[in-house]
Length: 87
Length: 416
Image (cartoon, rainbow over all chains, first blue to last red):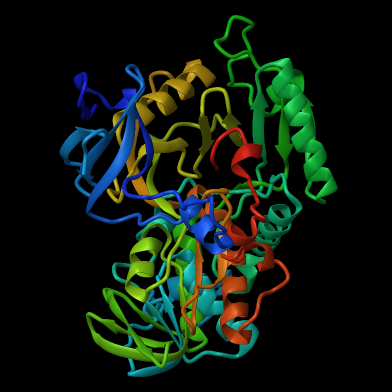
């Protein structure tokens, strides 16, 4: 088993974690008219990078979302941080 | 191409087996082709074959960064079926099953398609109702399907656990009799041999490093063996589709995950079908060598590593031993992983990439092997004519903007 670091609970078994999304996606401002393409891109487009990735994960027992940085090829964990205050 | 036949086998045996030649040529790449196919897996090789056979375009190069069928074509569990829910999917996958039915003859290469039946178990009354829904959808879609009671399931797979105190007792199942398994390597090698005989250049160990674009149109690729140009390009690179899209300058709604598979030591014949137990998230069949071939769901971590993680291994293998308690002591021979390209609706993407001159065939996710003949056939049609075949139209990349998703993930018990 691989251990992932929850910023709140520390190292835990990977099966306790749930992948939520790639980090850095910003929801379009829907108070103004946006195109179907913009909305579809927000909903579906993925960078799906081979190598260093920055993702939002949930640690399901504490139900906190956080930033997980890792390598999608070697599966090494680079670091994790709470969402609040993360750049 | 010298035909393979029983007569040839006997003649070669009598003359010391001196007449066999490599199944495909290994040419040095030319600087220009009519068409380039990126990716020498099943889909890419099939694309090249159908370009030559159906559209008389034989000046084709297949560019493969590794070896033929070394990706997902050689890493799947060889199941072939078309038991899909939506009419668009059923038409697409059944077209593939029909091509598989004649493939050994078409290619003059035994792909060992064995229509032993694809059996999905149900474990409760509500399961049975959902199975009836699936069965009805299949029949309406014109796919062969049978709804089975537990007794009928027992006739097909007596090794399953039918005890009433089983973790998930068996209530019945849905059978697609025409489903089954094929020999995965033979599919790649058969298409390669037939395509090569029609004049297609198969170039292995040649990695695409960038795309050559002129006036907004993709006109070729820079490779580890130098630049190769073409009038039209098509890519079938499965789990690495996003990497290729980044190079070419278009975007995809794909996440790459690892999908694991397992094979046991060879044992005497015990399984008659491809049997899937959704409650356990496990399915299994038995190879012609006797190995139990099994798999399950995706690893839950986006990944480009061609190896799996332990939680899924535990789920799949504990499921297998619950399904077949008698096989508890059977040892695993190998397990491995492949990188699968998963779309938001678990349906493939076939069509223009958004970059002029480049077509994509990807997003098959966990079920690409069964679709190899159809994927190749439809991609060849696109590359030759520039427009969609009727069957591939619903699977265009534009469906994510228009909202016409074909959500097969919601209609199957397991993402396969």
